[in-house]
Amino acid sequence: MPRKIAAGNWKMNGTRAALTQLEGIAATHADCDVLVCPPFTLIGPAVDTAQNRVMIGAQDCHTQTNGAHTGDVSAAMVKDLGASHVIVGHSERRSDHGETNEMVMAKAQAVLTAGMVPVICVGETLTEREAGETLAVVETQVAGSVPHDATVVIAYEPVWAIGTGLTPTIDQIAQVHDALRAQVIAMIPGGDIPLLYGGSVKATNATEIFAVGNVNGALVGGASLKADDFAPIIAALSAS
Ligand code: 13P
Picture 1: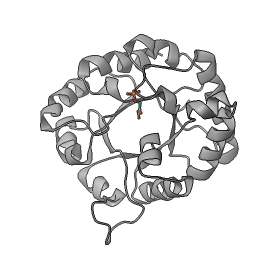
Picture 2 (picture 1 turned 135 degrees about the vertical axis):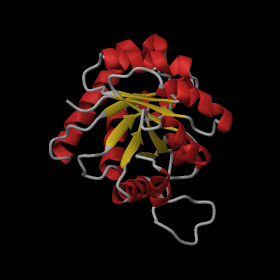
Picture 3 (picture 1 turned 90 degrees about the vertical axis):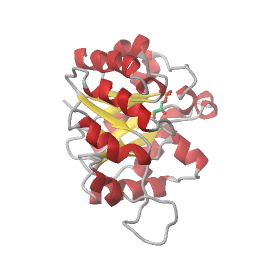
């Protein structure tokens, strides 16, 4: 069985005051892996606060280790702070920064080279879903942006479900995750990598989502910012 992971993506939220929420998350009992990805500015303090009770990750990195890239941050730099994971290819990076599958692949490879785990995000837009292209879009993104490495994590995040309160039906989540599992088994020896669902996961829908075969956890945005919201999601995954 793949590892179960409750992952929080804090996006561009949080100053040092948010470390009290991380303390609450770290104090939560978990029978699963827990990962929190704060903004770059909080990674060092978050590693200190977490004290290895939860894992800390970044939300992006550059493809290169160092060099003349003003404002960018490399995988080696966040590894040096104690990060274990880096989210790459989030839909907000793909849309806000024009990241292509090739760029996401290069970032994922940089994360692996630095000795960390890339959490690679894929997912269709509403237009693509309505055109019946969901599986084709996701398959193309996985083929183009996921290295053939048994340590990677994939997060399926339908773009239209992110931050909207909308979620696919359980059958729709199952359909994509089953297709993802088949694809990764063919791509990666063993194929036993965690497949996370992301997009409006909250305490009220976590249990039914975690009951779906081939869902091995969640990548949570808004509901990971407060310990009181994230703790029940961690509990639901632990009980699944
Ligand atoms: P929400 O949980 O806020 O919908 O965000 C999901 C997400 O984008 C996690 O990476």
